[in-house]
Image (tube, rainbow, N blue to C red; front, side, top):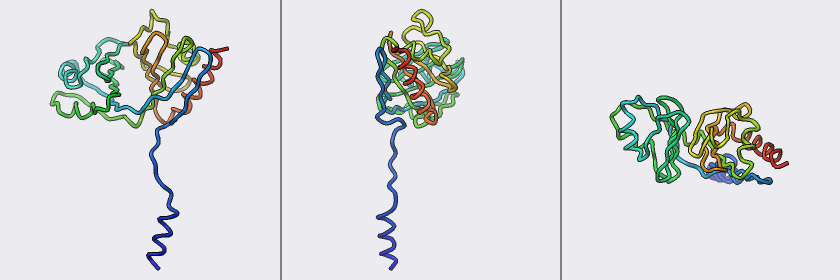
Length: 193
């Protein structure tokens, strides 16, 4: 009797499958395309000035030290978020948290890979789409390629990186990703009009 009950429970038990937030969602309008970027490894990194050189060497990318800047090398990008704070994104399937764990210099590295979702916004109307809800000046002079900023989009905090003249990476918390994607989709439609 116990075997029959166990077999019945196993047959009706729901399966558990981890799916990326916004899996498969895309949107295109005249002049702009939105796409959910593949999962990446991410860390939130805090460190004093004395630790930056050692961390840069371990991570394989020079941590930027100026506001609104980023640095990239071999699939790894570091965004300056504050005087002692960076977001490090690895799209090359390597683990930046493990690279930091090898060091004895003072720092705090926290894995946030599953917390964030990234959306690419590309095309001639990309800046107009983002500016529909973001106060950041996205003109090429004020926000050139490589510029990075922690800012807002609508009611949500985002990290924004300009990856090309007409392309941006929008990083947001997973719990806000549907809001951000929907906001950008509607804004893209308006920018195309």
